[in-house]
Length: 203
Image (cartoon, rainbow, N blue to C red):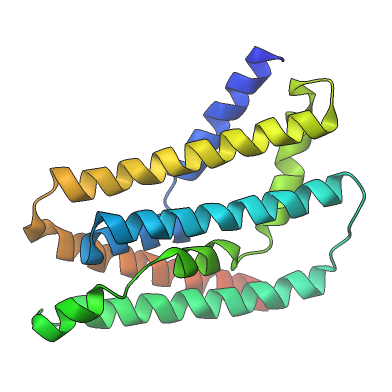
């Protein structure tokens, strides 16, 4: 195994995952509104989506599948609309004064299914993986072993970094700040959805 190449890949992945995006925003929102357990379920769902996209990318790299750009574009548009709907729902809830009924509804936020749907909602990530993995595919002499190793590193770092976000919100920051963090993350989520929608409609 090429340790230098593996280390470089791990550093790139760490920077990519830690950068705020729709999954990070959703996890932060869920951790602030519904607690660490629900946020962890959301992170696991998003992680499963990443794994599914990695498998699809591996199939493309190996020549087993070809995706039509127009199909990707329309799935991306639907994904942006879904993310936007989640964001608007969260903004409406967090902007209002909390009461017992709202607290009960907050327990329904997040979860593995929402995490998976947000994670899978941008199938263009497949193209990102297709572009990323060939740069590091020589970590071992076997294509299958290399893809397995790269996927395992991605999954491990993904859970570790999202877990760090959840820990900070659940153990470090006071409850007083969590509502505002949830509101900001929901606005960020909406901005990402709008930007993605504009991009997809313009191309």
